[in-house]
Length: 154
Length: 154
DNA sequence: TTGAGTGCAAATCCTTTGCAGGCGG
DNA sequence: CCGCCTGCAAAGGATTTGCACTCAA
Image (cartoon, rainbow over the protein chains, first blue to last red):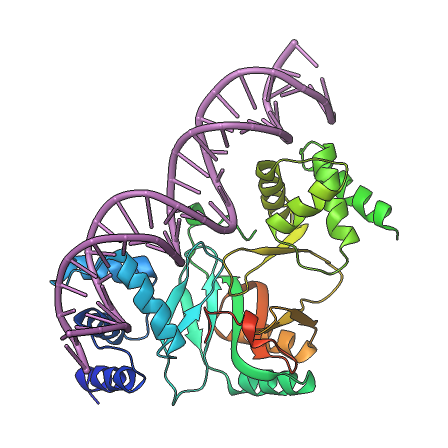
């Protein structure tokens, strides 16, 4: 399935839910598809927009991201930073998790059936209905520059 | 060991690291001890302070929290919210994890050796040196008020 | 046509910082 | 006494919101 197809499918989804399909929304969704599995912040999206021909205000960028999260098209990620990141929800794929390098700020994504299974089991044990899970491993990767070390996690 | 003993020990720790021991710092540490295993935000700490006899400015509250994280006395927690939470580091205890109810915003703490073991193994497999890990399960607990439902996670 | 969506600027929330004075060691 | 800490107020970054206008349906 091409990026266009995937984008079109999500737009159809929006329309069916009573949302209007605007060029702004289409562009934001396309940006996430083109970004592959990268995590983008609102500011990232806005910067990409500034480069391209489609100009969208920062306010609309934020409003669109929030709406897409509510629509379950994007997932909100909370690493220990000042701002949030977003990534496309892939309903076919199992949830994936992240290793966050405290030196270079890079993230490594990983999938792990055991983690997912364990999460489900823990939720059951506590009698709650699971919606999402995120396993975050904070670590230092081998080649890190200490210069850029983050201060908010020792 | 009493709360006073634990507080005193941490203050000694500060002194040894070249930090000054001020009534403000003592008070903040004591508040966390008295709060048991609750997670407090900067604003929470400040509110508790306002109630009590010790008045501390919000700026100092933030500065103290940040310093205590660097000292590894507090751990910073990032649930999917606009502000951070802090909890006492217990170096004897294994890391614990959280179930966050999307309805009522309450958190359930849990420990799980399997999760910790799995985290360690995953870090090893990826060749990174683990510093901390947090398994967050976002869920709905049975009795939730839908009124207070959080918007930033569908 | 019409109200959901947009852009702009102002507002808000959380957190940090500059500066002058205070106090721990 | 020295310089780290504090309080205050102002600044800062990220995100939200009020309002008038625009455009998708």
